[in-house]
Image (cartoon, rainbow, N blue to C red; front, side, top):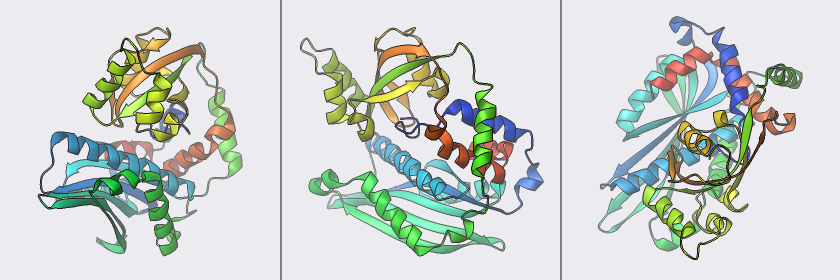
Length: 339
């Protein structure tokens, strides 16, 4: 999963946008000026102690919900982007959010906090969603809602992240607290097309892309188990395992197929593993770790790269342009280092 595999953001286009934005980046003083943009702060918190594998799962789930919520914010016409605060506890994450807010100048922060409580009597998991907007020298809370679920097996089995995001987004949208931030930075459709055409003219020549499928698991041991089943004397079919076990449910429904990618569109670890096969079909070897989890990857084929259709990337391209218009690229790079 690269943010979200089925509707991929073309990273070559995004990189070009960032490079273009860097030329007009503001200095540190400009970065502190208030900006009508929305920062999604993805956080997590545990109580009662959590083992390493549980924390790995919590981090993975936090990143997953961040990606899904960010898609909703951007599709709603907001100049929005997200950071992941990889620190347990709201005190530490609050301090980091304050620093990132100071750097970007974004006046609105949406906190999406993944919470887990464990005890000998049971426990609960869920999410807190809090919206703050800067008023004067300090943020004011405009919206706060909690979602809680039991840790019993039936509840866990029935829980769906897609369904949760659907509900949470509907609740947040109904509250109208983000209305003041919507369409502040309007990106005309003709400008999006013009930017696409400009970038298309610079599309790299002689670039290869690879057809991939994967099985995504939360932990290394889970991914190794999938790998072992594929190498059994009577191996399981990759597509069957993906459909049954992959945490990327959307690609799992397609047998794990995530489409065609250039190496530059993949996380570094995946790019290295895929590139090492030299385009030859087959499993890449050991499971590969990225921020989304552990991937069992199979290369299905290779072909010359071609520019994705405008219809496939226009929405994400517009979202990138909207954000870059609100927060200069150099400022955003500094903020990401602070997370």
